[in-house]
Image (cartoon, rainbow, N blue to C red; front, side, top):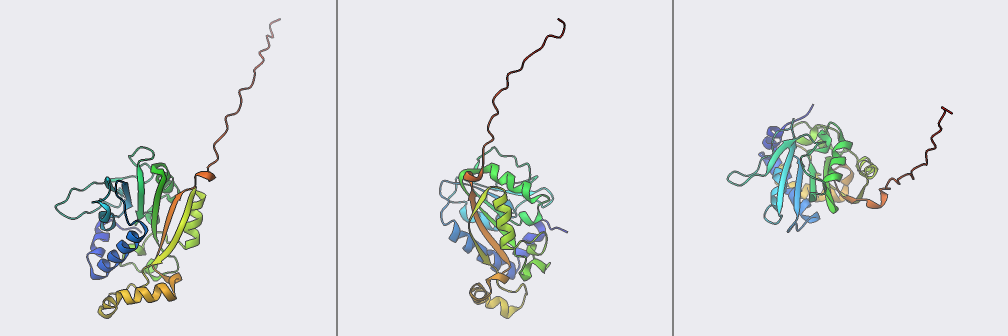
Length: 237
C-alpha cells in the first residue's frame, strides 16, 4: 500500500506534521547550509523542504512519481514541479549539483533503478541526501504519516544499497525521536523529546538521513578489446 501527495500534504498540515517538517528543515539546513548558484532537484514529496533553498539556488525542481501526484509549493509563487516515472526522469546527464530524495526511495517500485537515475543526473562533484523511515523506529509502523508506508531501511541496509550503486556515504544521522502520537503535552515538548532521543536512543529514531557522493573510484571503465585479425579461407580451390 502506498500514499499520494494529498495524503502527505494533509499530514504536514497537522500540528505534528508541521513540527516534523520544521525539524527536518533544520537538519537538512545543517547538512547543506548554502546552495547558492547550485541546481537542486527534489525527488518524492519534497515541497515542504526544497523551498528553503529556492532563493539561493539557480533552479529548484520537484519531481514526484506519477502515482504519487504533483508536489505542492506555497500559493502565489512560481512552481517548478512535475510528475514523472522515477526510473526515466526527463533531464540530461549531470544536470544537478544537489538531489534530495525524501518520501521517494521507500515508495519506489525499483529502488535500485531510482538510484541509478540519481547517479545519472548528479554531477560528478554533486551531493545526494536520502531520507527514509528507520526500520527500528516506531514511525515506520504508524500509518497516520507518510513514513508508515513503503519499504523502511536500517542504516546498514541503506549504506549497502548506496555503496552497491557506486555512491559513497559521507555520513548518516538519525531524526524524529518523538513518538508518532498526537498528544497535546507531547507536541508541546517536541524539541525536548527530540534532544533526549537523539542522545539516548538514536537507534530507535523514526528516520535515517544519509548524505552521499559519487564514488568515482569504484567505477571501473570497460576496456575495449583489441580487434582480432580475421583470416578468410577460400574453400573453392
